[in-house]
Length: 165
Image 1 (cartoon, rainbow, N blue to C red):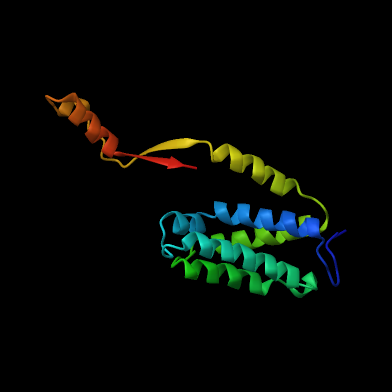
Image 2: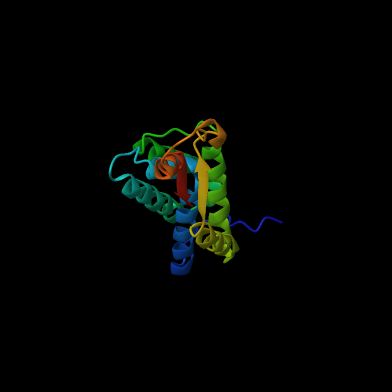
């Protein structure tokens, strides 16, 4: 039996708060949006544009009075958010994120906040990790000889990108 509501829905204050947090966590993990914000593809206020997308998604769910009518507008909101960041998602992730947000919405309506709790935990774990990523220009030390070890070390460091997740 489907436990999804079949009629007008009003979110409680708690449901709105958890839903808002969940939307933010999900969108912050979306590769397309994260890359756009991290690289400033939407300009200097890319972060604010992403936050506005979170707010627009929450507003969409708050205004949605009858979930049985469908969620056609949600994908449009997400796509518009990416457009503001000068980004396209042609990898199927737009549909995937849309479905994830719809699932989150229904879970919050049922008082099931497990997804958000898991996102909180993994978000705090991943934000503390630093990953070393090579740009592929590492050269074999045997092939190069250098009189100055500091110059050699500087060259190695320029070939490495540290990413805070």
